[in-house]
Image (cartoon, rainbow over all chains, first blue to last red):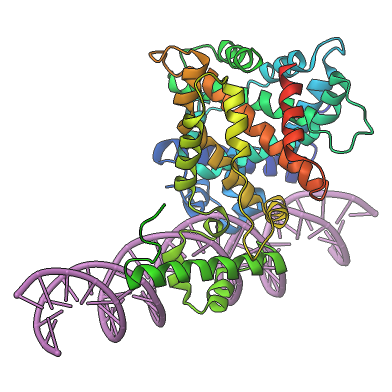
Length: 198
Length: 198
DNA sequence: GCAGTTCGTTGCACCGAATGCAAGGGATGT
DNA sequence: ACATCCCTTGCATTCGGTGCAACGAACTGC
């Protein structure tokens, strides 16, 4: 896709390299000794940079795990809006979420990431905040699929559907995590949705 | 109900008085200058206690606004379990939530409280964490109402229904807040539930 | 009422996350 | 080669939160 696979400038290349180095180093430490037990000083030292530079790359410790939320949010919105308009809100959300499977980094498996979230309240909090943000991003498309009048002032319906779908996703992931990764998350998600729409 | 309206011991009485003093003082400051702009030092000074004593009464700044989460959680669970077993999960949750109307303190109206939550990310985060806790507390009752086999390992259905209902509650409150308190929150809640079960 | 214990208050030192600022040095573009 | 940009770093500072130890007032049994 990208006509320039090689990064244009040296600064940009090193910047990306340092970014990746911090991420993998931090994730390794998080998995080894836990998220909360790992300080930013440790990460910076292990990555070979100063504490101050760490905050130059990431606005907070949580951001190392969460990644670029804004970019991810936009990707999710675009994925949803690319779904055929014939799909219902629930169908479109389901397929969008399934396409979200985050790739495993070299430093932590998805299961380890899930365990980290379960262990660290501040990570869970940010995760839920992210979902609130997605409510806003996805609402226009879902309103269209629900047939909500655009003029309606603060109609709660679209956001309710999105929030419920995200809740099903979280519940499914949590059940999957507790099964040690053996159960099928898509199955669990479908069960959750079926339960609340029964 | 209580055969002893007068608090038994002096220590207990002063303790409650100081607790109430801190709460009202803090809420007043939060409303005046915003939650995040108010420091613990300010609250302590305005309440006439030391900073260290503040943390003797509240484990965190958020706790002043959130109140005793464990006690509230137990109350919610008991309210839900007191609903007739003939009610469906959704009906029982609806009635439980309606009974939750928090009383207005002298220092802040419900609308002001809602505005505070909307303004302060950390408060929202704690609020959502509280709902996660409620998922666990209410799951046994909802599983019964859904007819879920108790032996099922980590069945996601009850939690999905609870999370969805709480999401509807939040969405309804947010729409109510944005209307400046003019719309009917119960109506909004019912609309939200109807939308996702349609 | 008195002695001993319990418990609340406070100050102090400390930790960890996060931000602002300014100086130094290497990369960049002309 | 020179001027400019920006990346790094250290330093100081803010704020929330915790552990500890000392002091004093309230509670208990006698």
